[in-house]
Image (cartoon, rainbow, N blue to C red; front, side, top):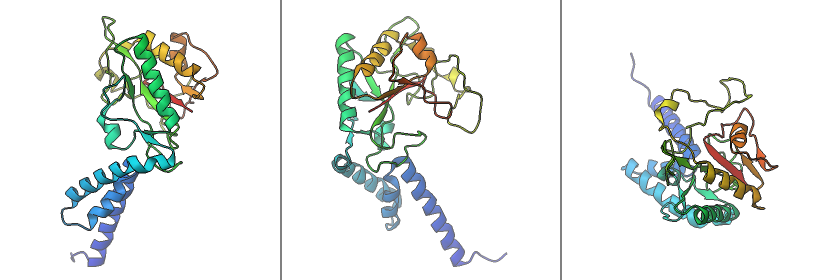
Length: 258
């Protein structure tokens, strides 16, 4: 068998680096550009990490020109980003009005229930309206954000700053639904994962208070929560919406937007 031609090897390298660029860009928005910088250097991984860190730091100064500001990843206040993952992946950017609404929400809950932590999950990338934040169908304009539920243990004690899953998602509160079982949508049930999570329950007072506070905030336009949870918490109102059967479930987190 003849050895691969230089042209074939070059095309394979182009394909590999193109895939790396696309994947890193889709996951972090800035990672693909850091990879392009690293391609010109011998110590590729080290240069990639350094370039990615530099670009991420620069994004905090440039993003305000796109009407987005970063949520603090090292905050010890009542408002915090749930995991370092969201910060490292540049998924912690929001419109200034969303940040103000989050801060007001966290402060109000903490004043009413001292020691309460409000945890932010996925927010948005720093730049470009319309750039998708996978796997979400929205979160592409800085005006949307997800927060984690508030949880209690089996004895009823509030679990400050804790979520059932490591990233706050995919630990579902089971309840009735009219959505059919389908494979080609984003409404993942992830049944195999559910027994893995701790047997904690939603802390109803804090969760209900948070939803009521968001619904009364004139800056907030829509709140996505599964209907069975709204029924359980005895909540209703025009801002509470069902996201539809094609989108991700919203009984593992709260989504709200301007």
